[in-house]
Each structure stands twice: as structure tokens, then as C-alpha cells.
Length: 122
Length: 109
Image (cartoon, rainbow over all chains, first blue to last red; front, top):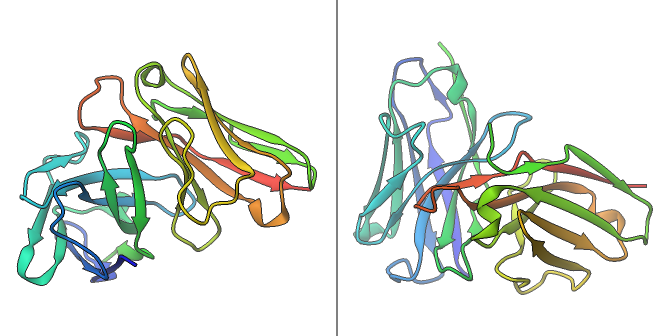
């Protein structure tokens, strides 16, 4: 059973860079049929897609975050990472990694990590 | 603001049927997926595609779509179905961007 596990700093200072990693285990990370995504949820609010990457490293980013976001793949470690620069309090949220199936009839986030809370504060 | 619109809250009596809706122009062209999220937990995919349930999702959950509106129906709601439900689909541009609805809090009375 494929599992995803987020890790990284839970507290980031304003203007600094938020960095998280998602470890993929129990299944195929290299399948070209899936993408690997980051989704966040501010406290008490809804879900927002940050972006996703193919195993090849080709990535797509939410236009509202594109100037500050980078998602990369580490094939040797079966993990992918998120960097979000110049953070503010508005970036405080639970960050989830999830597997995204981009097929026209599947088009869904079918496996999620448990999420990690990141607080932006000095 | 989200391009997918959901009612903020819906309630249903135990054992009755409830429909949760999601509206957006992109739904005329793209499938929607539905997620259940209980407090303190990650979202769980419950419906995707035309009307598909992942393994382990009870068959009381079903999906449908007409025009710009997609619906998640729970037939015979159970206490454990009380949760937030989010829809998700591609945005109007049809490119790579996916958007979530604002979520619907379902209360089972």
C-alpha cells in the first residue's frame, strides 16, 4: 500500500523559505502515470493546490504562488520536495502531499499524506 | 475566490439521503472528484470520474453531474459521514490548474 509522509520545519520566520519533503513508500514512485503534488489548508479554511510534478521533474504551479514555489523530485530517495520562498503569515497552513492521477477519467488526488502544520512567525 | 461553488453547510437526518452540490463552468467539460475530510485528518477521495468509488468507500456514496453542477449523494447517511466535503476539478481554462470548492460541512442529525 503506497504511503506518503511529510517532513520539514514546523516553524518558519517571515520572509524566509518554507521547505518540506514527502517520502513515498510501499509502491512505485517512478510510474509515469501519476504526479506528485502539494496541497495546503490554512486553519479553518479550505484546500488549495500549490502544484504538482511529474516523475520527470516537469512541474506545474498554482498561478497565484508561481513566483515563490518550486517542487522537485529526488529519484534516488523516492521523495519530492516543496520550497516556498518569502513566506508571510498567510502561508501558515497544514501542508499535504498527495498522489495525483491526471487521467481524464481519473483526475483525482487518490492518496494523501497525513499533513504537517507549518506556522510562519517570528 | 474559488471557481467551484459549494453550499457552506448541509444537514441530514440519520438514515436519510443528502445531496451535496458543486457548481462551476468547468464542470460542463471536466469530471469532478469529491473528498471527505474529518476533523484533524487528511482528506480522503470518495468519488472520481463519472461515478467511481475507490476501494473501501461504501456504496452509499455516489456522484452525478448535469450541466455546470456536480452532486455527491449519500444514500442512508450514517453518523460517521459527518465531515467536510470538497469538490475538485480543472479550472475554466482547462489547463493544468485544478481548483477546490470551498467545502460543505455535513451535519448528520
